[in-house]
Image 1 (spheres, rainbow, N blue to C red):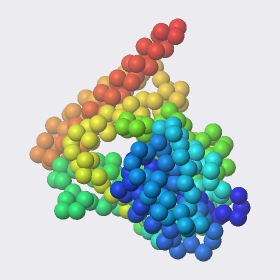
Image 2 (cartoon, helix red, strand yellow):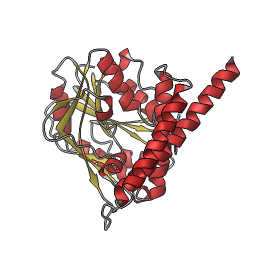
Image 3 (cartoon, rainbow, N blue to C red):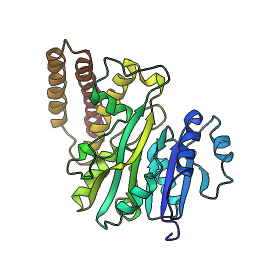
Image 4 (cartoon, helix red, strand yellow):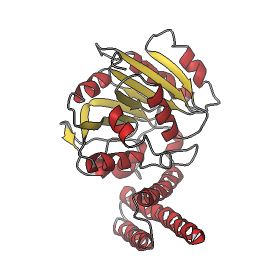
Amino acid sequence: MPDTQISAIICTHNRDTYLGAAIDSLLRQDFAGDFEIVVVDNGSSDRTREVVEQRTHNRHLKYVFEPTIGLSVARNTGAKVANSDILAYLDDDAVACDRWLEVLYFAYNNSKLAIAGGKVTLIWPPGIQQPRWLSPGLAANLGAYDLGDTTIYIKEPGSTPRGLNYSIRRSFLEEIGGFDIHLGRVGKNLLSNEELQMTELALQRGWQVAYLPEALVAHNVAPERLQRSWFLNRGWWQGISECYREQLAGKAGIAQLQRGSERFVRGLYKALQYFSDPAERFDKLVYAYGQIGYLNAAIQGLLSTSNKN
């Protein structure tokens, strides 16, 4: 393991259109040390393998097929295959800046650092600009992440680095048993919150989590994501993810119904407050809709517990 100083991992599922640019951005890294690029093909049925094989003449690149669909499963597979103690995850539709690996690698000279990620900008589809109804808060659902131009040590899990530009120390990942396969995207469902959970665990155990602005990544916005229905669906799954995360943390129970109901009403109230602002109004409606997903998952959890008893 020590010969490879940092491992870049791309987990991909049917994104052959963007994948080549993601790999090429890693092959162009300005990093003097030894690194590797692991592409985890998570059950793709498109040209993913061909895209990788076109570049396998480069000694840094390796390909692995993981048939079990799920982002967390694929991330764990990448970690098992990788040969270094620092694991850097880049999304298959993102492009890393030339110093991405260098900035991440040297950050881990801090022996207390468990997780680090960088700033994320958005690449809009050709001829398309940010819609008027898209708030900065909802733009974060597309991957946008900017905490400023100085290094910040995260104290609140809600500010955790985005999974599309994310690195983790292997020893910490092994300490917590890997990425939780109950969270993270699986096929077309949009389960999330795995990075938030990781940050919570890191802070609870005395580790540090850092935002590194110079570890810059640009994220492609797929045209189909610029529909209101996509954000409503994303909000629904965000609510479900939050419910599952609470259940994993032992916070399940009847109190979830009260929390979800209060947040639902709050979201509708704020949508009315911002009625004249299309972006903020839609933002609050997505939040309220997400609470329906949260409540639905909470009720299913209570019914499941009742049936077991």
